[in-house]
Length: 256
Ligand code: FPP
Figure 1 (cartoon, protein in one colour):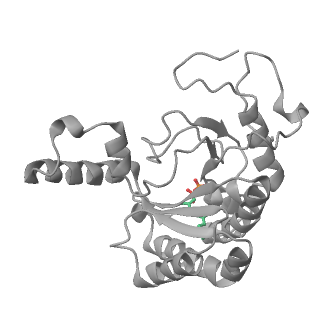
Figure 2 (tube, protein in one colour):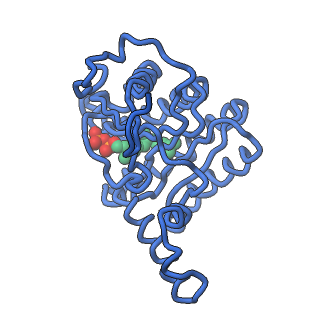
């Protein structure tokens, strides 16, 4: 099955419409889910699914870049993923390093800028080193921003923001009346990145799993039953085409 579609009011089917290169979502966020089930279906250990899923990232980055997407945020490790067996956690936290060891030269060549969104302080030193090196080596690029959500949880991110804002109020550098939506956004992990236009979640789960809850307020959501290791460039295009059929009103009314 290509995608999980909810019946559109206008009955339009995005598989039948051409891609509009003038209306590409500038920020796409992806919850890469289903690695474990992909592996189980093949009688393989869960880590085989994570390994296969890592290869898919490179293909999707390349395609997103070709389409003209500005920011691609990938949910790679959540603050809740620490609850998994230690072997799996260790494996997951080695993936950024192995991914970057293999692909950093190509990412540099493709003008990609690497970023990270999450709590670095309790990540293993080797993970932080690999990501920091990639950030540094791609800092002068100005193409696609590849933003890895690593040790990321939206409630954690918001709690940190509230702590900082409360502390500024306490010290008198901020007054309560100055607290507004822009100020909260400015205290999140990656304030420089605009909110996602399109969220994709693979594997058939229809939930947000503590991912960018503030930033997704007006994001278009797209779900597919495909497990992440089987996600393809064609399916990315499919999601973008479906996005292009949506009328985004941001709480207002449709113009025209
Ligand atoms: C969810 O699938 C996936 C993850 C928790 C990890 C996602 C990570 C990658 C795809 C690779 C990360 C690579 C880099 C370079 C950062 P699951 O294990 O929960 O699948 P399941 O729901 O089928 O068990």
